[in-house]
Length: 249
Ligand code: PEP
Image 1 (tube, rainbow, N blue to C red):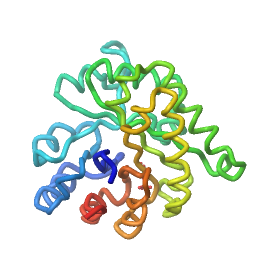
Image 2 (cartoon, protein in one colour; image 1 turned 30 degrees about the vertical axis):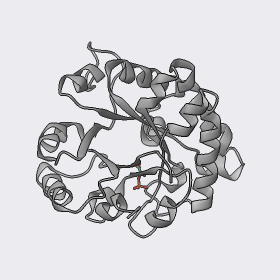
Image 3 (cartoon, rainbow, N blue to C red; image 1 turned 180 degrees about the horizontal axis):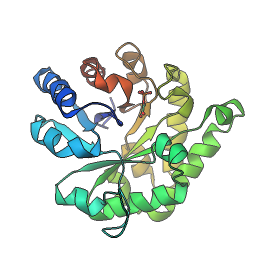
Image 4 (spheres, rainbow, N blue to C red; image 1 turned 180 degrees about the vertical axis):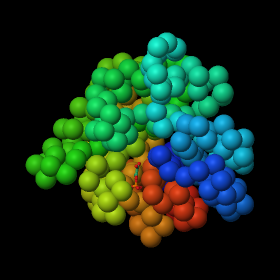
């Protein structure tokens, strides 16, 4: 049995209203959740506070992004300092939608990650290859490059506050899930890479899978040695998110 606590994150993206998300969270609050799973939901920014206040104590709340600087003339942005100000404990960084649609680079994501950890906010750090990269056998190269940018600016101790989300871009929101073997292989490569920071980092860092996870495929994926949980998009907006949280039961 792995000593790593199973971790399930729900990324609501730019979906829902205060009413629908409050009702959804009420369902999670009232459900039986595996006490051994760490659960974090990431609502749209303006619903963070009301949902954080509504969530039962076992459910933490994350931001979906943040700016690396503490304050300034950055219209539309929210800083890590401001997230800290409201006692938020998690932020998702490097999601593929931020990388592709908002042109965030490996270096910017690494800078944000270092700033988050310095501010005292834990990071769900996303990596993953696109379809062309997978088809040309570049998965390990791409994921290593994305991790390398972070490893250059993080200390060994910093990794204790990072969860790595492996999210193949071709599997996000497409209904095309990676097979347990495909996911396990890349997770093992990521863990091997982490040994560069230290063997302790490699052994203790949670590596979670994201990409069309649902109640049906979660159980098989969760059985793999190096899959320590999930980052869930679409299915986190549905009651089946509870079954994904309970995938190890
Ligand atoms: C995501 O966006 O992080 C994600 C994994 O989405 P989905 O589960 O919808 O593929």
